[in-house]
Image (tube, rainbow, N blue to C red; front, side):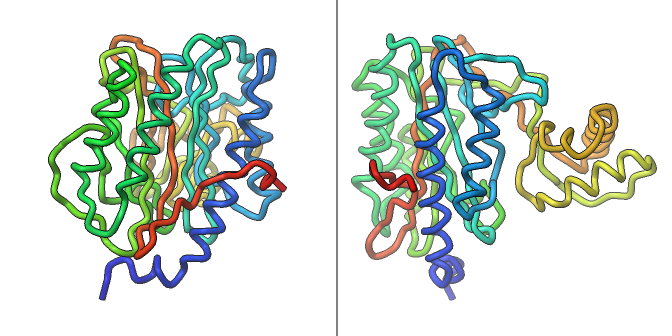
Length: 306
């Protein structure tokens, strides 16, 4: 029996999640304008996902300039959009089947080529997808496309498989030629997400994080921590953010509980990921269903936003 049999049986759920994700992503793009509130745009994107019949697979993320991923609005975030390069990443699930998609908005108007580098890399990779295509071949297409624009792929960020209620599963889909001969298999669902940069092409983890996910069950002593843990369990194994919790519980309880849960290894954190040399970063991403005919699940067409 194929390990991806359930994906094949529930293909319509994957399609629905992808379609909603594509709509939500392009709705988000329309909101990212100079003077708009980072916090308000984040909330509106998440509200749109719910209104379209999906569930939020991870908090709406908008990473600015040299940060590639995992930048999420704080509960009291005062950031306004101005002239940033913004990587918008959106995730939707339908009964656990996930659509993961991203694009880049250049508010400065100065970095169109950087944006195009990641977009063209995604297009190049998508053209060779088929059962049997190797991970190394995908990485090679991405690397060649990005470098043809004069930029560098981020080597320690990659695309990934998607599973039910799981955003990162095997295989890891590289953004450069690893010569990995692992083939794509029928029924796989994968997210391909090229990152292009004019920096080092390597990211690192910062110290602070406001995105987390449940890791493992352990007993906790503090009543406050148990209260926070109870709220967290509503998100199952999927990522959540501080902003969501502070709408249910006082901030002092959230902050105490998260710190306690982290120290005990009950939750894991996802800190922002900047380029090592603070180079600007662009991102593009689609989710694909690998079958006899490969489907782009998160594609979006103008006029398809209702």
